[in-house]
Image (cartoon, rainbow, N blue to C red; front, top):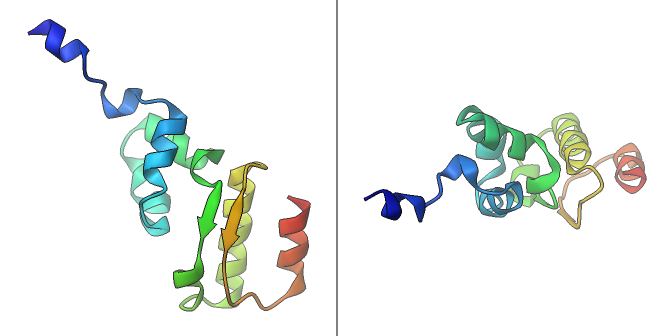
Length: 104
């Protein structure tokens, strides 16, 4: 019985890169509100750069006010810690966010 259990890993023991890849399939709202509350290892992954290499805010952009979108983008791009590879967003209404994106 113990041999069978050793073949399986617990979710909190997965490598951060693997968890980050899995988490990219979740809506951003869940990544920001639910996942950090599950356990320490998940919180660490979601607050690190592993989940923020590909940011897609297109569907949410239409429903957000420009200052909220601006703030969310700044937070997510900062979390990506230079690992951002792709950004999809619409409805940006000022140049300061473009400057921020290019600097980061």
